[in-house]
Image (cartoon, rainbow, N blue to C red; front, side, top):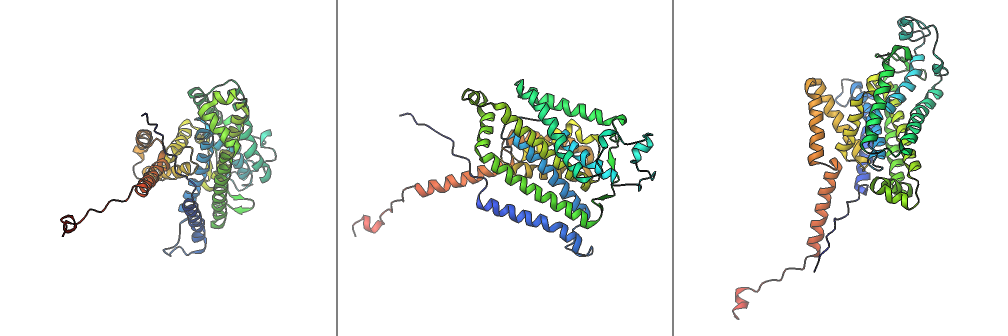
Length: 391
């Protein structure tokens, strides 16, 4: 008789213990800037400003990784150009931060130092209204979103997908990097924006300001995780997974995949732009190097390491890879790129579903073992020698 084998379902990821763990981790992370502000520096409980800024940067990367997971993990669209959306959000916020410097620059001019050095007489037209924070935040959303919408519309309408789509996204971010490297574009050339002084009137280097930026990033990361989970569990999310797994069948049953792909692609770009906007005031610099193709490839490695199509995995991957990067670039800077390549190769060969996939296998194996043990018939007790002999 022919037997039919099937793969057991994947263990549920967002279980009650996982939610409890997420809340505990979020509470722990939220306490770190408070320990920096309210605990004396000579105390063992004090957290340094460097650690607060570093973890805040990691959380910005986690938001970008989560955004990439929506298009790659759930829709099957591999982007090698998400770094451009991240950088554009950073530049939009950086324009406001540069104007907030006022006359405190080296040249004591109303213009940023790089414009004075390059003999600019006035702000370019696209710098208009960027002295207003709300307008800069509008640009953070609109600029990456508009670029993604226009680029995605023509790419998806032309049915470009797979490796060809990945190549043109990489070409897009490389072209943007070369454009922003030019001094004539009005974005600071290869130096970019730096030496920020204040944000919304508050000193940007003050511990209290850094704490607010850090907590805002943490809150947005957690809110993005909840919103992304709601999206992928909805009917819309099921269509996205159908685009990933069986796009041709989806078209045959009457769905226009263009607008589904375009929506999640644009949403992902906007989230990356917001991550970049949160990144700039905490790190203190934005330059065209953020648009380089290697940075976009690193984002893919974050998602692959943590586990694509899991939402939690990209957050873990961003933390693990960037933690390793911080350690190696400070101790053995010459081997970082080799280590990054090794991580990608090892994950591809031995952890194709990432760190989260490994934990899923362990949990699934334990559940299968416990269910087999529960379903097994009780063992028959053998008679003793005395009973067997009739005594």
